[in-house]
Structure formats: C-alpha cells, structure tokens
Amino acid sequence: MRKKISALLLSVALCITVMPATGFASEFTDQNETADEMALQTQAGDEEIPFAGDAEESQETEITATPTEKPEITKAPMPTAGPEITTTPMPTFGPEVTTIPEPTTGPEATATPMPTVPPTPKPISVKWKAAKWLNSTAAQLTMNTDTDGVCYYKWIYDTEPRPVLDDSSFSVLTRANNNFKISLKGLKENKPVIVYLQIAGADGRRSKIWHLTLDQKNRPTPTPTPAQNRPTPTPAQNRLTPTPAHTPVVPKVSDSVVKGLDSPLKFTPGKFYNFSVIGAGTTNSKPGEGDVRWVPKYWSTSANPSGSQKNISWKIGSARGIATARTYNLYVFFQKQVYKKTAWKATNTISSVNYQFRSAALSQAESKQPVLNGTYNGTTGIVVKWKNVSGVSGYKIYRKDGSSTKWTNIATVKGSSTSSYADRSVKHGTTYTYTVRAYKSSLLSSYDKTGTKIVRLAAPVPYNPYSKASGQLTSKWKKISAVSGYQVQYATSKSFSGVKTVSTTATAKTVSGLKKGSTYYVRIRAYKKISGKTYYSAWSSTKSIKTRK
Image (spheres, rainbow, N blue to C red):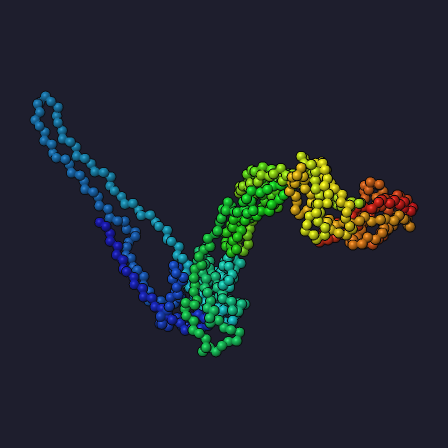
C-alpha cells in the first residue's frame, strides 16, 4: 500500500509599516505600530530587499509524515502451477511418465532506502532599518541581519572607483536578528556618498556586497535650514543595492599593437626610426580586481635573444644600412601585470609577440651614407670624423654656423679611405654643426640631417711653471674669454701615464704634496658648459718643472 502524505498550505500575510521621515531616510519607530511597511527594491533585475519590519502574523506549512516507517511492500502473487497433465495409459513394458513439477517463487523484494540530500545553506539576510544625517559631514545607518558575525563597510564619493572590502575595512559586530549601527564621519560636504557593506557570518558564510546611496537632497548644510523647509525624502532616494561582482578584463598578449613600422623604411647607414608599442590592457584607465595588462619590456630580431640582443630603446636602424628590400621579424617581449586591490602587480610571466617590418631598396648613393664619429677641438681647428665607406670617390663636408639652419659645403676630400677633416676656418667661442656625404661621380649619398655639434675653443697658452716650496708646483697661463674654466693635468711621465687632473676657474693653479725633487710635466685645456654638455679645447703645449726638495 502507498502511504499518503498530507500537507497544509501556508498563507502569509505581510504587513508593511510606513515610518515618519527623520533626516534623509525613513526611520522605524515603535515596532508595535500597525501601519504598512514599504518594501525597498533594488535596481532592475535584482532581488527585492525590504525594509526590516516585523510581520504581524506568521504561519508555517505543516507536512505530516512518519519518516521512520518504511513503505509497505506487497509481494507479487505466486505463479500458479501449469495445467494438470493426465497420464496416458502406456504399455506395461514402457517407462513410467510423471507430471511436470510446479515452479517455485523468487526471493522476496526489499525496500531501497532514499538518499539523504544535504540542506542548502541559507543566504545571509541584510536589511536597513533607518538612515539619517547627523550633520553635513556625518551620518548614521541602522542595519539588521539574521546572523552573528562582522559587517565590513567602506564609503566612497560617486566619482571614485568601487572599494575592496577586506579585513582592512571599517567593521562592526553583528548579532542575529538585532539591529546594529554604522557611523560615517568626516564626509566631504556637497559630495554624494555611497556606502558598501558585506556581512561575514561566524559560520563562514558571506553575504553579497551591497551598496546604499545616501540621499543628497536632504543633507544638512553648514547653516541648517528650519525643519519645516526641509524636503521630505522618498524611500527611493536611499537604495540598498547588491553590487555586481567585477568581471576581470583579461586581454590576450597578441592584442598588443606596434606603430611606426607599417611602411617600408629606408635603412640608410646610421639611420634609425622611432616606433611605439601599446601593450594589451595598458589603456585600461579604470582597472578592477583581477584585470590584466601586458607591459612592453624589450624587443629583438631574435626569438630567443641573449642579453646583448635585448633592446630597451624603441628605435630601429642599421649602422651599415640595408640596401635591399626585405621583410624582417621583430619580437616584442611583454610582462604580465595583474591589478590587486589598488595597484598593478608584476608577475613572472614574460610572453613575446612576433611582428614584421620591411626595408625599402636603396640606390647606390643612398647605401653609401657615412656614419659620423663625432668632432673635437684640435690645435689648429675643429676635427670632424666619420666611418669611411668603400666604393666611393670621396666625401663632402658640410657645416652650419651658430644658429643657422642652412648647410654649407666647406670642403671636398678625395679617397674612400679618408675618415677625418680639420676645419681651420673657425672662430673661438662659436658653435658649429657638421655632417658628411659620400660621392661617386655625380651621385651623392644621403646624410645625417642632425649632424654633430661642437663649440670652438682655443687651447690655453701656458707660462713656465715654478716651485716655491718643497713638493709644490704652480702653473699659470693666459686668460681665454668665453670659457667656463680650465683643467690642469700633471704627471711624472712625458706620456702622462698616471696623470692627475684638477680644475679651476682662475688662470693659475698651485698643487702640493708632490714628490720632492722630482720632475713633473704639466698641460692645460679650457672647457665650456652649454645646456648640460661640456666642450673642451685641445691641450696646451707641455711644460715641465722640478719640485723643490
């Protein structure tokens, strides 16, 4: 027989109480009042979160059953015996025929116990009972929950990113079905305030993260207005709304972009191009917990570069030049970073992405561009140096004087092996810029349009040094105009090995603590500092002096 289980349906009448307005939110007064209580709804699509009122009447659904009784099991009827077989008279000399035996019944069936389904943990209930402004910079919330535990909370202003709730947050202890208060102090005036909170139960459960937007309209001003002039807030002005969990933004490293290498580039000797790399996720201006970005660290033309093959300057070029049109691989290496709480944290993950760039074919002249090696002040003028290139007839030297923007061809030298030129038509104190082009017949190579800059400084003219005291020497020289100072070098060797250098802005320098009775060699040069760079003259002629014993 099947056992019947009867159940009584439960009807619950919910009564809602509308409370008088105090401050900016509806507050509960005596819980025995019988006025209707208004339910507070969240944003569209969320669960309804009511004010925490007391229900006047409560019933539970009654289910009658006897869980310890096993269901009655009816045995299947025993099969009946087959039709009776009547023996046929047989000859007396044949075997005796017997009837077929009656079949026996199977084993008795038993009941299978029902599996036990573990109960689903009940979610933590969070309700707000009241909220009010204490003054223009302080407020108080009255909350209620159905569990013992801790309420973590933080508040922000409406233009700030959502906070992270953890053990560093503000907190208050909670008791099951008892009200607790959250105090907010030091709030900025005229700044809309949003409070975020979460309940951590003593049994290990955690509630959703909720946020409550405080009513700004009824916020007190530094000069309080009469109570009769304050607007009455509506319940919709304060919403306790579940904050959706942040979905981490995790871009692929291959989403990174390289700019500046799209068109074929003319890689003339010494020509370099700037390019940029935008790592995937690096444009994320409002990151959240768990977001990922890929930060470019270095690049190489090798898939597995060694230390010297890792380039951290985002420039590409060739000292010798690339004469033919080709496609090359470019590997950019990125470091993975993850946003944790309030900052990006670097990981140990390094991934590379393969890009490509192309070189453009060069003419014969373009492929012969000389590479500048710099300039320096010589005794008779400024010396310009470059790396020579084979297969050319010679070189043309160009100069810009002072702040001029026009290049002037000041000299032409023959021979592909030539690698320097001394410009004697220069004036002390003037700034010059130089560049060089190779030529072959009527063809001219490209050139370094920036050039190399130097200030012409004449070498000082020294007087004979002297020694007035034991182990001491004094050197003097003629004053040079438009310089920042002078350097004096002295050594016991004519080749100036083991040399020592001292600086001065005067036209004389005395050095003490020298070897007594020893011969010292002395030379001087001038220097000038411009925009953080120091330019030097050539060294003067060498003078010698024997120190006193």
